[in-house]
Image (cartoon, rainbow, N blue to C red; front, side, top):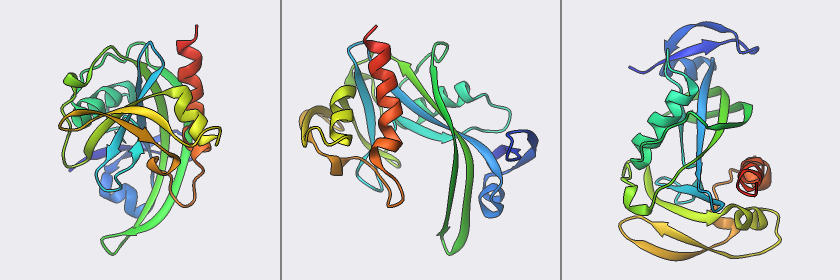
Length: 201
C-alpha cells in the first residue's frame, strides 16, 4: 500500500499515512506536476486516458521518504517511459490544492501541496513508452502557441502527436484538460510563461 508523508497546513511534517487514508480524511500531502520542454520552446503534454485531453507531461504523489525531484523523475518514467535528470529542474510554484468529491461511493478529500516543476530535455518521440492505463498519447506544441490559445489570441495551432505513431494535429482550447471550477490560463499560464522565458534567454 502506498504511503505518503503527511503535513499540516503550514507544510510541517506530521507523520506517514496510507494514500487511501490521506484522501479519506483530507490530510495534507505532496504531489508533483512534471513538465518537460526542449530548447526550442516546445512543451510536452500528455493525453490523459480517462479524459482524452492534454494535461501535464506527468504528475503524481510524492511517496513517503521521497524528494519531490525524485518523484518527478519516477512519475515521468512511469507514465511516458522517459528517463530524465532533474538536477536542473526549475520550480515554478507550490499550489495548495483542495478538492472534495466522491469516488467509488466514498468521500475523496484531496489536500495537496502541488509542486510544479519544468525540466529541459533532449528527446524525440521514439523515446516515449506510454503507460496505457493512464496515458494515450503525448503532444508537442510551442509553449507560446499554447499560451495564445489559452488567452484567446488564436483559435487553433499546430502540434505533433505521438501515440502508436507520429502525426501532425491541430489544437484548440477544448483539447486542454480544464475542470469546471478551473480557468485554463490560470491552470497552465505560469508554466508556459516560465518555459517561454527560459528558452528565450
